[in-house]
Length: 288
Image (tube, rainbow, N blue to C red; front, side, top):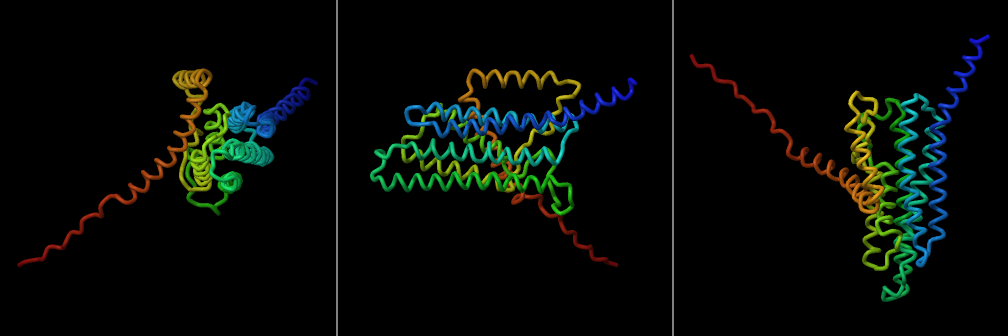
């Protein structure tokens, strides 16, 4: 009688392990929905709602990294989990940061800083287009990732797990959230800064759909024999984020975005200044 009971317990435990990554994904969706609600509530006077939205997106980036790693560590990856994760990412890292970027950088900017109210409307519309393109780029990035992750020979030449092709959508959303959090949610008040924000949002969108490579952090092994250094580094990083979240997260987001540009430029220069062709040896004429 003990053997069937033990088998049923194992079966329940196995089902619970499959549910665990989905719980993190559900938390990801909840944070994205909360971020959207906070963006809607944000005003010029109560701009701290926008900072709350940025913080929610930041926590969602953490949960998004945990659900995939937990699924790989427990061997509970499934097609349902991957599809649910993609749909959650569209909401949390596409819709929420796109709406946040538009309201923080364009909608709440006072019209008195511009020479004409018509220019204010045009700039707001331009910001809406840039934010929409950010959303479309993120959704396209997810679709391409799902195809690339499919182990079919229809997509040869895939890079290893060490790199992503294009900036991942959580990182793109993290850049938007880090900039807003750096200003603690206080909206842009200058037309020139708003124009620069258009370029920033468009650049992040382009990096997501580009073929530039970004480090994936998937080769970090927490089960190694000497994880002490890694634990110390992570503890120091979390401490810095806790005490100086605005500056640290802002620097990390921009450094990660710049890393893809750096590796791309390095590849271009290496391709142009490749190794010289091997010398051609002339056959020596035979003399008698």
